[in-house]
Image 1 (cartoon, helix red, strand yellow):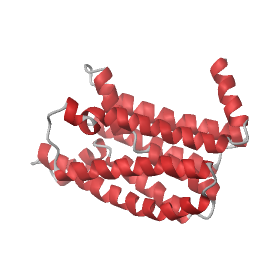
Image 2 (cartoon, helix red, strand yellow):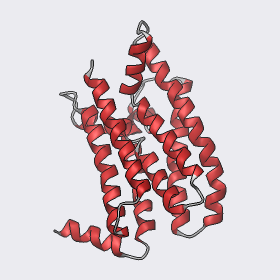
Image 3 (cartoon, helix red, strand yellow):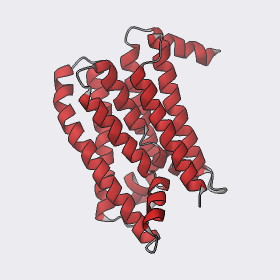
Length: 235
């Protein structure tokens, strides 16, 4: 009851929409840092595994997106709309680079681990390695950029796009917390879907209705994770 009351109080406040996206952005940033702390951010202290230049570039681009996403949410919360729009140009270019470099990173990982795999199997492994979530991210960002004149649509699609990137980070957290049993992939999908649904529920409570952009964005995140689970179950 106390948790439900807290959510109601949050969405009832005048600045609740801005707080929702600011808090959502910070939560995503925290999950990404926690998930990649051992293998990337704190690897100099916790891991001796070498990273390829492509993996480094992928990590830098993804970090840049998360930092930019948090910054953009805070700029809107503080009503710095002009600066938000100027940085949006950088965001669009960065998102395109993330999709390209991310796809190349996944392809390189597939080549290293499954050098003899045929085209069909490589396609399925690409989905298994969260390549589909990367595609959903790119599609939602593109839709958000095309609809940037409508702030209600733009901000919801951007939030859903960033949530779509969560499975690899959450999967690594789950792998550390539950090292045995191989549940990390299922946990990552379930947690990502739950995160998206919580954002959609909070947004709906605040607005009194389901916004179409949030509905489509959340549906895309759910579909990507379900299809990824089906591909992984096929092994």
